[in-house]
Amino acid sequence: NIADDGHAIGLHSYSHKYDQIYSSDEAYFNDLQMISDEVFGITGQRPNIIRFPGGSSNTISKKYSLGIMTRLTKEVQNRGYTYFDWNVTSGDADDKKLTASEIVQRCKNDMPKRSNACVLMHDAPTKTTTVDALPQVIQLFRDNGFTFETLDSNSVVPKHTVNN
Image (cartoon, rainbow, N blue to C red; front, side, top):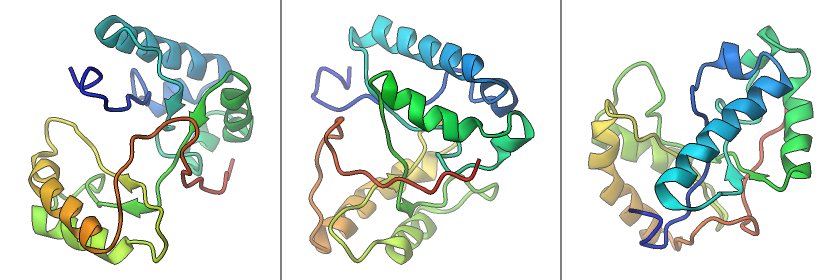
């Protein structure tokens, strides 16, 4: 598995149902525990890096629990997790399915002028063009002086402004 190959495993969500996971702090941590247990069952690892569904800046969570992201961003850290957001988006989360070329162009347009980038990409079964674009995206970043490192709790990662 990818963990055996030295790749970092990060936690995201078990259900990815915003109305459920953001209904309460307890609901979020129950969902996080379920995905942690699932990953542990497959890899034998308990990752401590996470990305919130919608990012730490999501505002949809306001519909379900006012102030939840302010609480969660603090509490995940109290529980030993490091959360990360992104500063480059591939656009593959859009409703419209993008071509591989469009994904590469979005990454190029969004590429930061500094040496630290974290690209938002998805690996759902419908995201086939993301897989097709990945070699070109990697080359694009390499050509612009970026190197690739495994994420861990000491990584310099972008954090969004919390809006709820």
